[in-house]
Image (cartoon, rainbow, N blue to C red; front, side, top):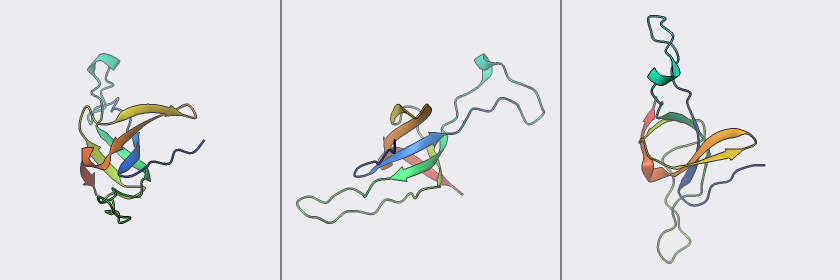
Length: 96
């Protein structure tokens, strides 16, 4: 099954939490912080202007690495993979 977002929605694959520190210490599950970074998998056509067929272009593209807020989006499972669908407005930054 393929997930195709509508309007200004994007599909994100969240980045896995760090399980090891820079010094090589393995963190237990209770000490791991959730990562709020992810990779953009699909982008909608953009938000439609009132009463017209014109759309505003999305600022993110497929493949971009992004940073999003803690409570952004809706988690979904597609083909056994955990993904997040969120409005482009919930994305805080593109990581380059």
